[in-house]
Image (tube, rainbow, N blue to C red; front, side):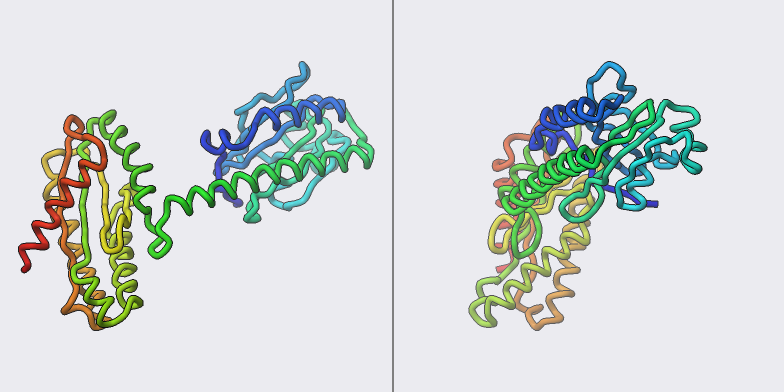
Length: 326
């Protein structure tokens, strides 16, 4: 079964002008003299109407949906990745037996697949009618042009997302950078207050990274940074916010529902990270030089302040840990 994980979120809809899409399907319905012009998106085994024409005889509305399991015209386009034009569904040996025709109002259908820029299917652009139709080749070319315009919008959306990701992501490690931590962390604080959760913040620093860079080169130093980033990804929870906020400084931001065990969990997490990092670092001859210093602090939903103040508190505890080794 084909699965599409890419849903058009509210944030994405704010980039794409859905009013323009609405005008497009309204024009489709008018030009093709059809009951319905619509753009449909496949969202995790379900087809969802993104926009539908507003003419009086239209039987579809925005956010209407139907299951992948229904043998629909849109499903056929997704499976074949090709357009289709069924002019007389009641006379078609296959479609006359399907639910949209037998139980529904559909008597003709013309549609094209819409693709994300990466090649995955977004959904379909459709002309659906309650009467038999025969569209001219010129009109079918118009539909192809509308399809290209929708694809161009999706490319713009992809480009905006890539720019946003570049702005919020650390190039070396793929983790969030400080800007990404600020963007996600402030929202996490708001969510924790609303859910009455405890926020945990872990501040980590690689010991003696400058010494490694000076004696063994920045390539080895970068390997230490990448190693810690991978350890954090492997040991953190999927919901944790993990960021590299400086050359050798990292943050894990997490949240807890059970206030009684959060300190134990954070200490266990830090111990795991330390052990995994030291083991990995020993494989490229810096194990005796480098290690990890860390500090962590918890904030119940009533004590959460601004993110930078919370980071500063965890930072002070990290330096206390680092100074204790000297």
